[in-house]
Image 1 (tube, rainbow, N blue to C red):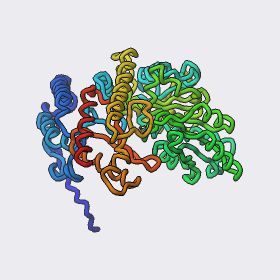
Image 2 (image 1 turned 45 degrees about the vertical axis):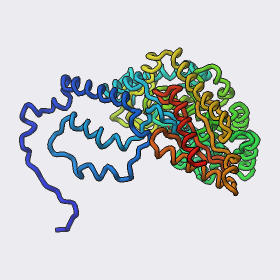
Image 3 (image 1 turned 90 degrees about the horizontal axis):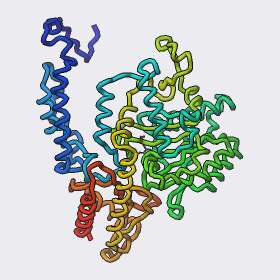
Image 4 (image 1 turned 30 degrees about the vertical axis):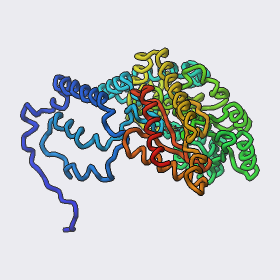
Length: 511
Ligand SMILES: *Cc1c(COP(=O)(O)O)cnc(C)c1O
């Protein structure tokens, strides 16, 4: 016999499953579910009540949890009460509290009661709507709310089901980008031959989110053929149409095939907006697929005063926004619209015998499995439907405008302290600032950009390790900036002024 490090211990059925009180009905006993469900809602409501009492950024060390949890799963059942106690005791310290009113890091991932309840319903129903027939309501509601939302941000009709296009809710932008690249890739390879995949070139600015690069890697397009076109402070880090054209022409000259452009409305570092209109015009000339990534800022376009940022989108091919960022749905809820759903389904369809059905063959229905990477999918449309209905467009606009106002307010506070400066214009609800070089010149003999960057980095770490507020940073054009992103659901003006006090106090100690 061979020695194996795996030891297998065989067991006899000890009769547990034949006795009635542990029959499989305890998996989902309606009355016990009611009791535990109420308890869970109370648990979360208490959490939201007390959320300000926790350090915003988790203060634990790597590996903290392994030290306190047992190293194997319990053999005997444990009660929900015990488990919830352990959540408080062991899990909470390892949380960064994204819904805390003092959370200003990354981009917000804004919860709302409506979003949470919609999610809860989706999880409770737990239908798997990969084809229309597997739950017609899941598909049809998604068709409807995607048209609703498209209309709200004033996307051209060509992106909506009612205009021959269509929308799908995926998990994240990363998936949405991958699906659109693959659709564009296959469309092109059909023309030029699959052997020519090595010739395909994709474009974006150097500010485009890293998930674009990840999608390229997965899509099989050569990473060497990814042109991340440099941006400068002079153009506020937006993609310059002239540079795009030059890059395209250079590639064509050497026999490469321009395929895809990713333009961003609201970059992650600085919320820069790429000039869609001229970029799409150029792309159109060369037959390039344009994807518009509006992950965070797309939601602002529900307010008409922001819709001008989308001018030119009529000449793009696909558009995505994360409703889990600034549209009050819980993670995950990435909305993707395409003008030509056929290009998606051509690239992504598979139909094994065990999934064949009359409705699909009639071609009168949408089968969302052919619009995305995965087969199985959650009923995410419910939470978007809940959010849109519970708040109404009128209040959604109010929430978004209140975040924008708070950002203006924060800018105002910064501009009254000459030691600080705002580094890039504030387009939405995120402010990029730093302690200015001139303030440091008063304290240090020698000051260069490295020194300024290091100082700001230390300031940010000092603030974050206090646990009182949480912000994150970026470096663009060699400049280290602190990002102050507003939008957590419990944040009010008082939290903004309080955050500013905290920032000033830490700066006072260091300056
Ligand atoms: C957040 C963000 C992404 C990444 O979103 P995922 O859904 O996590 O993939 C992409 N682009 C922009 C502009 C973002 O702000």
